[in-house]
Image (cartoon, rainbow, N blue to C red; front, side, top):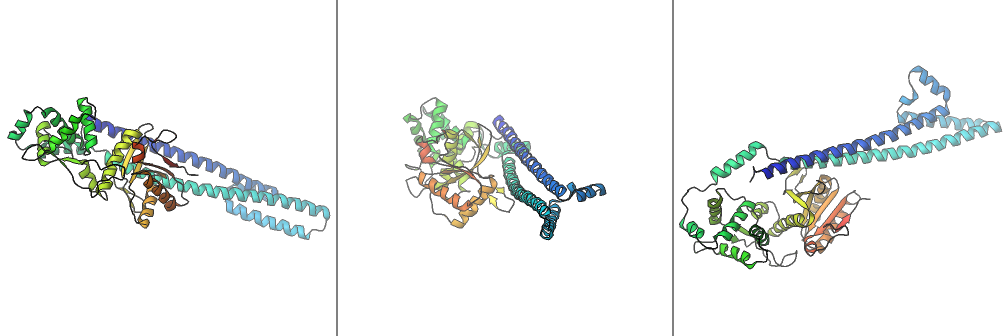
Length: 436
């Protein structure tokens, strides 16, 4: 329920994660900027020393006049040094004394060497400065995205109170007198298992038959292979002549699933089933996860894959699902909607996961998609595919779309990890590309 201690704990944990990410990012940025500032100071001091060596009198005169050479801009120092070198060259050409020519030539060679070193240092500093600007921009976009997600998963006390009140007042049973079929059901020998299944569906919103069987098995302390568990759902589908308490959604055009095998049954409470849940608990059931997600996804197949991906990330990857498909506004006006937002429970890192099927897609739209993902994730891209063929195709697609951009990609596929395949480190991300 919205207002229970678990929601408050998740809200508090989400806030701590966000604060820690922001603190670490700011600390990292300050360290980089401090290093760059130190390197610039050294290069600037080198330019000042070149001026002192080339014309000590001019250097001293500037110091005495209150316009110290060290306060000059780098560009001004560069122009002065070039002018002085040209003057030395002219003097060298005009000189006729062999010894004087040798001295001038040595001075010129030394000055040219210092200029070359300083020019290289200046080039490096410009590159570092550009990288710092780019990194700062990426970090700012990523932090903004995380903050937007935080706002969608952290309800205010007022919102929680309103939700609880609405659930109790608007969706509670309209009468305290149960219908005959409800009373007959309570007296039946299979009522305990069947009512537990209804309560699980109403409390969790879960819709996949295998998942519901697993949850029912845990609730009843049975193994998930116990045949009576599946029969329980069959009885609820064929409840009586008045209709079932749950139903199977017929949404797929093909029986074969791209993740392997057949599509699992998608179940939901019927109107009678929702009413039964209300009589059993006194509350309204939460929305069925398939019906909630289908409004935001391309097809039933993609919706199913999102549900399965979320379950696999929790079961095999040690992640916690925090939110699905929040809308994130990017600074350039683009809208980024990640399929899944999860938290790595080992280090508290929040990541956005894209869920992909092996299907024909518009190339232009795909390039824009991966650029948006790059910006929103600070270059850390995570993708869950349906099978190995899709995983390879998506990796190639990302590499082409992002070109020379710096990014880390982590891809895997549901079919392989279900079969027990893991990376060399033991993780679920089977294809990892690290920025060079």
